Length: 147
Image 1 (cartoon, rainbow, N blue to C red):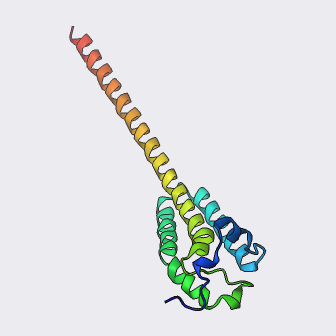
Image 2: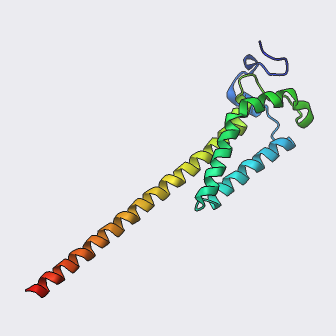
């Protein structure tokens, strides 16, 4: 049974009509976008700080995990902070404006980690090859001294 505070999904004609019906100047939505931009900037500027990024990644994934609970809480208290009831029973709105940008930031962090890993592997291989060349030169010098 659907709670009365939810917008039923059959009331939504289409994704684009749903998006266009949103009042994007609502203060809490502006705050949410500020949050997403702040997280994006934090993910970019802290890309060399692995521990902080791991903590940020974990916290962001927890927010996505609890988005259903956040949706239920927001649907029952929407009059406190919003001009309209956006929180549908299937979580379309919270998925689009809350979870999707968070997951995109998480993908950005994973991509950064993969890039850093490939750079580290490349540098390690270069160091190994240089060490091998250095050892071969030492071996050649020692052979030439013996002759």
